[in-house]
Length: 119
Image (cartoon, rainbow, N blue to C red; front, side, top):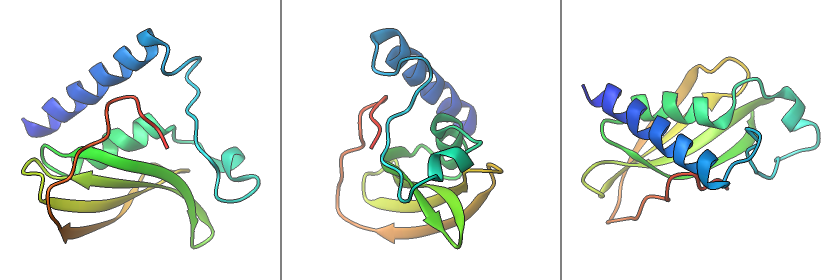
């Protein structure tokens, strides 16, 4: 049930961002880690974000970025758990959409980034 709730929450956030003009023409703003990285991306950030959120129950994305890891473009997501204390780093392959890594980190309270905010 939590997976469905996360998908609905992300979908609603995306619709609000598009309708408010925060995202136009499906373009997502980010700074590539290396030249030509954008051309290798086949999985858009919103789709990768949904897959990452499926791995963290009731999580919220704190930050995200596109980076090169082991010669492959990867979406990196820093996700805070529902309690605001646990954090997980999730990597999603930007060419296949596979979740390739998930690491847990316990920290103090943090604030999730607002829906539609991209770094």
